[in-house]
Length: 227
Image (cartoon, rainbow, N blue to C red):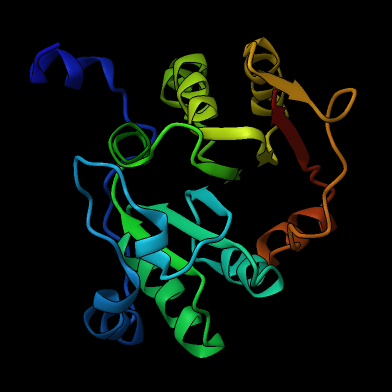
C-alpha cells in the first residue's frame, strides 16, 4: 500500500481545531514535555525503557484534559499508563497534573492514535486499553469518523496480551450500541458482562460526567477481555 492509499483509507476520528491554551498549559508544554512525552516513531516501543521499570502497561486513547487519566494513574501506581492525544491544550493540562501530583507512571504521545497503535506497539504488549468518551460524531453521515470500527478494534486486540482488557465508555446511546456491536463481533474478545458493564471503581466520575448525570444523561461502559 502506498502513502496515498493509506491516507485515503485512514479516516481520522478527530479534527484539528484551534482552542485557547492557557499560559500555564503552554509553560507545561515547554518545560515538562521533554520529561514526560514520547515522540512518535515508526518502530515499537520498549516499555521497560520508556517507564524505567517492568510493569503492566495500559494504553489510553483520547484523554481530554487528563483528569481521569491522572486519577487512575494515582490510584494504580503499580501500572504504567501510555496516554495518547493530539491537542496541545489537553497535553498541557495533563502535564500539569503529572507535575502537581508527582506521578511517575504516565507517558504521553501527542499523535494520532491510529498511527501509534500501528507503528509503536508490539503485539500482545498491553495489559489494558482505555477509550473514554471518544468523539461521538452524532450526525449519521459522520459515523464513518467514529474511532470504534471493526478494523481498528481488531488491531487493538492484537496489541493486548491474553486476558488483557478493552474498556470503552460513552454518553451517547447510539454510539454505545455501535460499540457493543463492533466489540461483540471481534472474535478475539469476550464481553465481561451480559451487555453493558457496571462502571468499575478505577474509572472516576469526571466533573463533566457528574454534570451530565445530574442532567439525566446516561453513561454506558463496555469491558471486553482478550481470549
